[in-house]
Image (tube, rainbow, N blue to C red):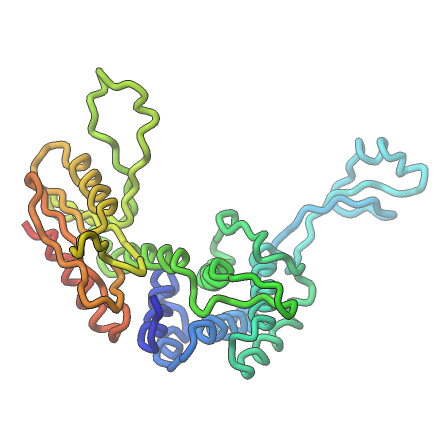
Length: 349
């Protein structure tokens, strides 16, 4: 999928929802600017976001240090001092906390900024803006972007503003296409489908969480509705986790986000819904509807492609409503939001 100019702006709005930055200052200004290339948009988010953090004061954190010192600092490690015979040399092994800027989050920022500067894929003016940020990160360690463990990055009141920036950095790194030519690392023309798929899923869930918290939007784990008494090897059943589950007045809608280059499969000159996708949704719906009430529905929501035929399915299968449709990300945001609001009619009795 190749986003057009409108989709590029929408991708920023999607990121703002996905990473909980809907109330960030400057969101509307960035979303309204024209960007011909997605990496220019990502660079601009970093320029403004990191610039704002510099003005506030980049996040610092305490790090535990243990050193052989001539004077006491922090707590004396008596065992360590004896073991190293430091007292013979007139020194003590001390343990102390140091408040420093070299945090994991700042390492990510510096490393990805350097990556963007070297990529050659963004406007010269934005490269200059990114370079002007680096002096503020002089004391921060430069690391290999591929070594970042995104799941270990935690957030709290002091660094919650970094969440959006870390999300942008993750999308950039996950979209990398490393090459050895000219000793540079080139970024993919667009973010990889895998990264966009993750963003698309998270965007849908957070959109409903932001605008419709009363529907308890979440990614839910579903249990298999099997006969426990006769079951053998039930532990080998795969986990079932929905992308988005919405609930209202006893009714449930399970949404599965799909971001593919081909939204339909073609066999024997016939275009149909991807078999695996439909079977997966049926497994979700039928196992969730343990009362066989028909109150559980399932919708496959594909990101629309340029194909002439798009998913358009709405059927009742053994008492449960199951369907597939597409969401056009290459339209004005107001139309996208209208489509997302319209999906809620699936929760009507």
